[in-house]
Length: 389
Image (cartoon, rainbow, N blue to C red):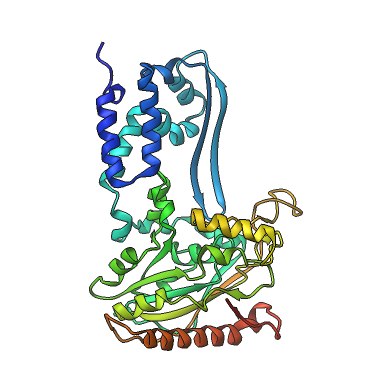
């Protein structure tokens, strides 16, 4: 009997070589695990069909705090695993099929190889998915509102600076990755793309999900591609404070990591894109976080891990599904995202340090003014002010 293509060591070796060239770490681990079974002369198809005990942990999808984790723990089957999954739990099968079925897994790895550069080339936003009713439920849960203070000319491109990051950037996702708050109606002619850590675009399946919402990697190449599109109407949304700012996302805290952030200013000047400050009132209120002031051992560990992994690990909690004292669901507190006035920017391919300083200070002044003008509308104490780090 001829073994399937994916059970042949030669095919696996070729696939590994291709993935090495693309530096696709996640897929390499996946295929190396498959190769290890082949090294022991045990075809993967037989392992899946006849083993009686499995420990399979599968990450389905994550949407800024709403994690769907499918866990199949020590399944003891006395028959065909595939048939059992299909008959008893079809929903589980839909999520696990790509990881449990070696053929589908290899096909997805090939697709991943071909599609590797898509996130950096504008992604693959699916307008239909952005209009699903589920996002309206998410909007109403908090609730979340998008507030417009000035018109944005659709013939121009924009760099929108989002503050603060919060724990999970819920306001940015709901307002700029879905139509739940009416972005396209408030700003007709604009297409929004939210920047996200490149790490997440290396996760199988999850990368396709986040691209469908208009997310792209937070690197210069991705942002430049969008701002170079002819005709204008492109709005690149950047959570300027990034992962480090999440460690300061405590209720009642108005710390903004901006004092030394000039990369997005340079990006805007190089492409002649107007700068637009955004402040999301309530973003820091939907989760509690374990106290981690600077200088403590906890903050040191968090910052150290963030420098190594690229993501921050705030120890947050809020409420549960049926009780309000503890859990990982966010509190139902309003988030009001206020979009400020655009700052005109003239295109300059080689901005000087002085140019960066001038526009950076102007941006900080506009963000401060935006906060002071609107804080009284959203329950912020009169004596509270932005603290720039």
